[in-house]
Image 1 (tube, rainbow, N blue to C red):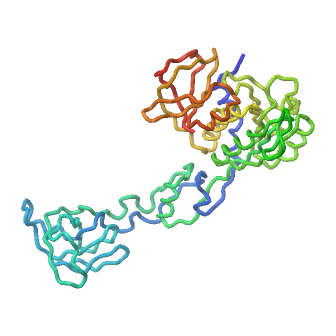
Image 2 (image 1 turned 90 degrees about the horizontal axis):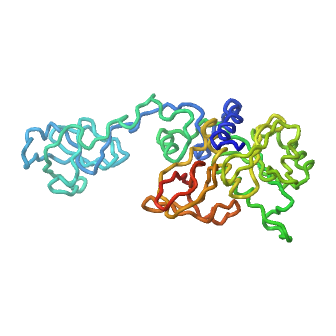
Image 3 (image 1 turned 30 degrees about the vertical axis):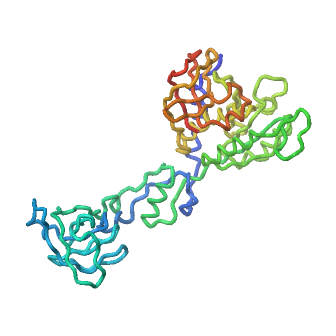
Amino acid sequence: MARSVAAHRQAVQELLSGLADAKGTEKLPLMGTLGRVLADDVLAPLSLPPFANSQMDGFAVRSADLAPYAGSDAGAELAVVDPVPAGAAPAMLGPGTAAPIMTGAMMPEGADAVVPIEQALPDVFPAPGVAATVRLPTTGPGTFVRDAGSDIAAGTVALRAGTILGPGQLGLLAALGMTAVEVRTPVRVLLVTTGDEVVEPGAPLPPGKIYDSNGTLLEAAMIQSGLDVTRTGISSDDPAELLALLRSRSRTVDLIVSTGGVSKGAYEVVRQAMEGQAVEFVSVAMQPGGPQGIGTFDGVPFLGFPGNPVSCLVSFEMFLRPALAAVVGSPAPRPAFRARLAESLTSPAGKHQVRRGTLLPGGTVRLEGGAGSHLIHALANSNALVHVPADVLELDAGAEVEVWML
């Protein structure tokens, strides 16, 4: 009986459950941590903003100087003092005065509000050094002022351990004055492509041969997911050669992933090479990607994906990516949405079908190509995986489906 998608995903997660404890940490410059997982909580070494500053171009004022004019459109006339540009340390603001101030500039001591230049009469800044007055309307304390620590206070948690570091997180760390941060070391993966019929891109293509797309496809997906990938050359259909290859590399990695040689044919090299190892070959109720290998090779976690390009990528997205997200916190899960089919589809009984599609403006999804596992051109023109549950045989155009954005 075929194993359910959920059951196999759980099995992969259990297989990888020891990776979290086995991984160490390393301190890297900020830009070297993009996409990596934060190892420890980061406490803010300073407040953001570090000082009260203006939210607008305008005049820094003592709001009490304008209070007697509450409810009056006439406002108050104040003497203009030296301007406060961004980056300057201003002098104290005396009573009855207003200081031209730029957005982000430090509030002068004594000032507690900013009146935007658009509300001033005249609504232009006087030339520096020229004696001038300005009429300003009533304003309350705190108006258009960003208080010190209003974003984050010094000593509080800026980022939690386990956070995946993206541009926003790195921007925060830079704003806090940090130049390096401790991150978890990435999972090391050995990626092996098998098959006598496969040749490297760029080499001559004899009759009956195909270029290897699986290696590039999976390596790209793994690198994008933050994994440290070692990709071997193509292994032939000789089990002894594959066995020697795996034994020469397995001690330096955390996980082995192979493509091809896991079905029930007569020349399934991965099945043959895994004899005597704690590896089982199962059929998962999924299309494409039904044949799967799972277990350990010489104690190292092993996953065997099918050889068709769409099958191996779907296997990665359905099983390995979610398991890594659950166990080591990276990569982030794929964004999932509900969308309506632009066309009808059929699905085999008892199998979770994964189709390729394009999510369109307006919330509809157009299928790209058919259900075949060889349709790599359709995959390349897709931006989503479309999920059809195992108990669904057909869906009409307009039916709602779950999609994962790629």
